[in-house]
Length: 112
Image (cartoon, rainbow, N blue to C red; front, side):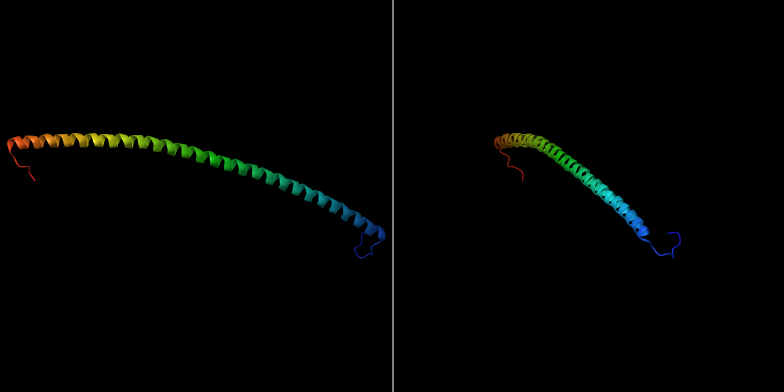
């Protein structure tokens, strides 16, 4: 088919059909390869997503452990502070009692 105005022969059509079939087969192979690549990419993405979820859970676990540790330490410290406050209150009450006894002995009314 050198001249575009010449009529097509059966041989030309057969040749065109063969070329089209060859291109169709090539296209099929390309589509199959693309589908395979997409499936592989999906699998890799799912694997990365699973790794990311696991990392998130690990971080969450570590943070919870740190918060619990802090809370326990803080609770111990708070208990010590409360014990110290109670001791100071007891000592202050003792001093007030002693002062009252001294005031009674000296017959001094307490100052307002």
